[in-house]
Image (cartoon, rainbow, N blue to C red):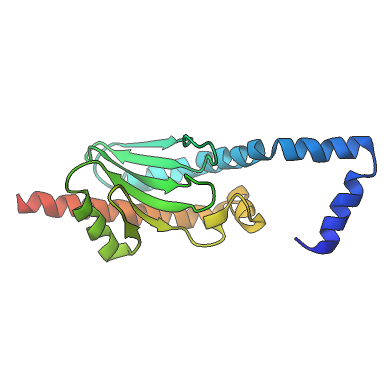
Amino acid sequence: MREDFKNVILSQSLKSEMNLEVAFETYNNWKNILDTIVLNFFDVLKEPLETELSRLSGTWSFELRQPLNRKSLLNIHLSNTNWEGLEFGIGDYDGDRVHFFVQYNTEVRMLLYSFITDRLGGRANLDIWFQRMDEPYNRWDNKLEGIIAIYKPDEFMEYTINKLLKLASIIEEFFSNAANQL
């Protein structure tokens, strides 16, 4: 933030009791402001994503989840009836490293994670495949550019939909290849 802008905020906040109250309440409600931005983003993302994913097989479900640590609400989980035990989407479990993820709860998950990594990059551990989002989305809740990108989400929505569709296509290819090998 520019130093002159910080000075304007400070001087305006200290001009009156009402201004100080507005600054204090903004501070107290910052998490709610961010959560509302995410809820609005989820609302505008869901329909076009649903339309695009409907071109693939299966029935889709979408869920906005709150992680146990309550640091971030930007956790969008998608699942498909054809892929039992598998979820993928956007994860922000520690509040500062937003990523795309795939989680598959079976013994062949590492084969899937390797398959995705070969086609899309990213990394995997024993539980999850993940790939960090590009800046400014990666740190959406503590950088103004990231907050604005989700607040005015046209570019972010296109980026997110394209990446999630690519992931869904790769997962579908994996299961199709696996079915052909049986």
